[in-house]
Length: 296
Image 1: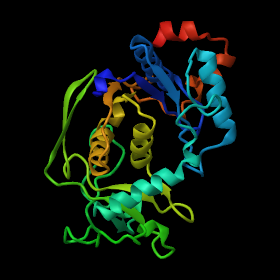
Image 2: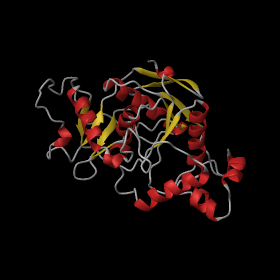
Image 3: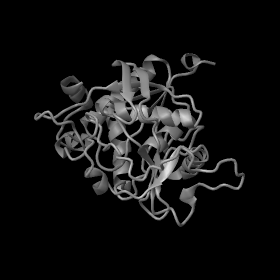
Image 4: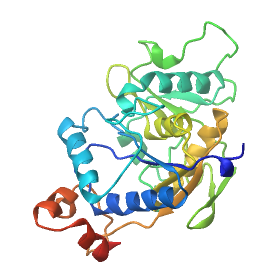
């Protein structure tokens, strides 16, 4: 069955690191509208992998604020579903299995560089993308840095020796990564120029933590998401993730990148914009209908 013949499956994937704001709501509303228009299913996934910033109170507020605004999903952390659990913090085994495939395939390598080290490089992020282009400091000189085929092989992240390093995906320098966006049309990015080798497993914590790129790909594939609706700031992330889909032999979903909502100064909204959080607006007497009329 082709992707177009499958039941449409969309998702909302907030992270409980603060209160949801109007920018989240507008993008999520587009996701819900597209799911409904296609007679599909909407999934809520709680992306709570950032242990330092994700708080239980934000997770509770996230559910409350989404319900208040008028969101309805058919699968999620509270209601369950066939692809549970829907909290990323409970899905670590899936990420480790994917990491092992990447290492066996020779796609990743250990990296000891800090963000400060990378900031000293000349290369800058691409447009709205926040990830600095990695200068290749720890990249192996040869393409053959990992022996594969060993049935007893365990990924390096399992070893106490290497849990203090990050693991990076080695991008194919010069390759054009292209996809057709549902709103913006054809998109092209050059690996090694528009984005560099990126982290798939961070050294934070005792055993590290999967990156957004890896966890997103693994979960969207496992939950059979057919279209990812998200902000235009993640266009470059889509190029990265397409490389992961290919390396893991997974079929990627369609993509639809929404315009970003910005404040009066032109800065895109972030969770630090508390005055425009759904929680603050709700307390101030705003209604979902009035907010949609003003901002959507």
